[in-house]
Amino acid sequence: MISFLGLIIVLMPSLQLTENPLHVLAILPASLSAALYTVLGKKFLANSEPVILTGYAQFFGLLFLVPLLSHSIFAEALSLPLGGWLPILFLGICSTVIAYTIWYKLLKDTEATMVGSYSYIISLIAISSGHIILNESFTINLIIGGLLVIFGVYLIHKK
Image (cartoon, rainbow, N blue to C red; front, side, top):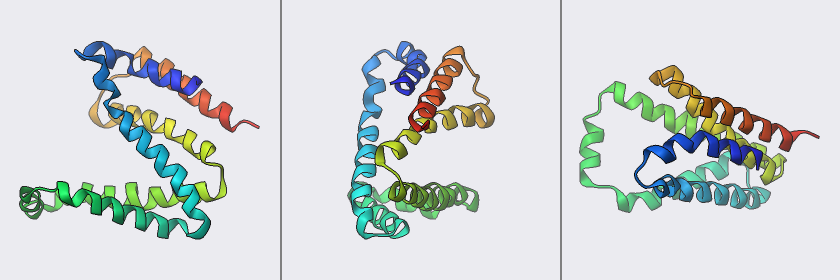
């Protein structure tokens, strides 16, 4: 609850800037999907290795996305220069294969609720990256909310 309160504090400026605060809730399906991915992943890990399960998850994810692809996506992909492919390769290799294999490895050895608590840290990494890469400013909401997120995750893992 402390980490969740921290996220609410981080989001407060977004809620005030949008004409419809319910638009912020549009991210809810992603959260539900991540929770389902973690819980089902834990179940399937009983009979599979993390890297194999990651491969299956990515393959089936791709299958469900194929019907949503347009013809122009292929033309755009073919016209991408090397500099355009580097971020795609980074996302595919580091953010998908390596990160989800590590996620499943942790999940195989730990309770789903404990591993799931690490997802709160994603927002802090995004905020820090936004500051470093995009020169976005830190606000008091980000600082207070971020500290609450870290404290909440710490309390979950404290023995």
